Image (cartoon, rainbow over all chains, first blue to last red; front, side):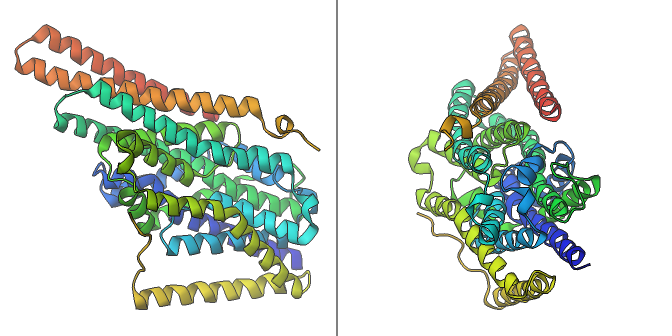
Length: 367
Length: 81
């Protein structure tokens, strides 16, 4: 009975994380379309929501990686998964508050790894999975998007030559409808799967599923719905950071950064790499800006984003570990997760009220 | 102690890099060719050069078809695993 209560809390927390993932990350997907004027904000966000929903049904390779290849599922308990989710949600909300496009994916993986290590020691971590499937792709993917977008925009300007700017701009804006759609679809395939993976991990830990199982259809559908709803709710602060504060981009740069980002995410999803869509799209945006003119990129803003990226895994891991420590004070039953959930909801509510009263802080310093 | 080669799935990672690079750069270049074709079509039509304008329009159409095909193939490849 107690483990079922924890499982319900874990599923609720996982779907809440998925919602914040959509709210936080998917803003990056639509930012370039909105900032270049290729799509109206509400239309871009509505379409991105639908495509995220659809994308979540396309593949389960990433979910399988998260559920079975990062930590040893045999020693994981629903409470460990819960603590990891709290770590991820807390880090997502902190970075959202300051307008930093950090990685929800790395927050999730960091949170689960941190709580698992706090519970069972470092031997619970599957080094091959964490390094080979998460850390190495985390470094390669944004660099790849940076290089691909940089070379793409250089070649695109060369092909376009001195054609009429009006036609060129309109053409790339139409193209952004396609590239933005692909990016939203790719985002749904990679990001929604992480939540599916975590819920599946909790179901395996609870004995509701056998080891190595794929996510059940209700997990896929609910994860798809949560990320789509989060996307629709929008994350305007991060749209502003990605869309205008890194570079002031034209439609061609928007198209190339989205195209390169989509290609990297789709290819990675195919091989089950749970990478950060945030890192990839921001890598693409920086590449498209740097190729035109190095000084076009506001490196101060880019630096702040990179610091948030580097901090994400350890910070979420630390919060996850601390959360596990707090829950374990109350024993192995449902009391700990219930207390932490109530405290977390109260904290989030207080932060929203405080923000509403004081107004939004300046997200990041440009320059 | 596991070696780097044992930890990193080199083959999958390399395939990801190659596919993503070729698709990302290729689609952008081909789409740029389509826009070039449309722009040239407009200019050549105004200069009253119908044969050249038709050729530019054909290049634009072919490039657009190639972009659409690349997108469809990409989605199919991704869903095939």
